[in-house]
Length: 281
Image 1 (spheres, rainbow, N blue to C red):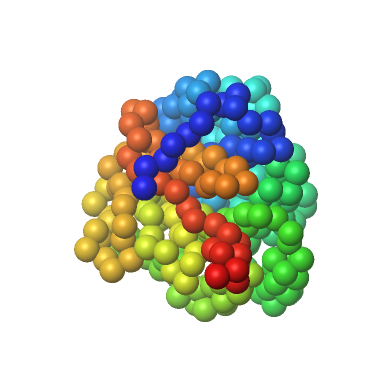
Image 2: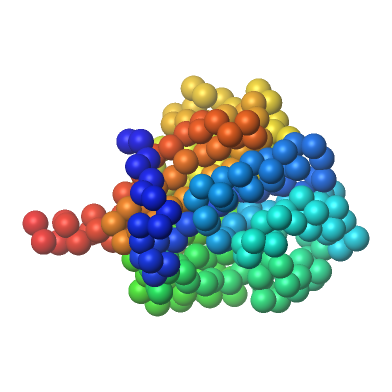
């Protein structure tokens, strides 16, 4: 189903949440800068105020010395416009940058590798998961946080994909075994990950919509297996980012490549609304 975005001025800030999503961006290369310029162009149209970063924020080792060239300069205009970035850690980030990144003001991690926050007066709650070190304390925290959440929409984001049709990495099965039961049990609507340098929309799994958005810089061309049983749509030719608009009734997405072309779009069904309809039938 195609996305039907309403005008940016149609709803108050408490009734709509707009943000972008991308991962594996921090190379400081031409592809990152070109995509960042398209994010700025998109900001004129959609007036989003937030970005989710899906890990591998700073290549190759997450070092603090690379922060200016591989984050602050590429996204300077978005930072100037007040867009807040919310990051997760990738496997490259933790080599030498775990402490620097979780404490970096512009990543809004609050000194923790996993955390949650809400937007739209509780309309959406976001759960940042540290997939590089998903241990028992984090699992307990996530279960308690998901169980306590009163948000209408629940979104998880992390680096390693539970489902992926890409050859280079693919689905991380051990993480899936640990994490997926929580996402399903507590009504998470969508989960975003990176790691594979492609864009992919996965066939919904047990009611959860999974997306891989790891083409924030140069993509890994020819990596997607389009005949995979879980593949719905994807692109491994151009860098890309996702644009999301959520209202109390709708969760619309579109994926935009470095040329400005919309390469995928659609709507995520609300699990909470589906449960409500089922209980009243």
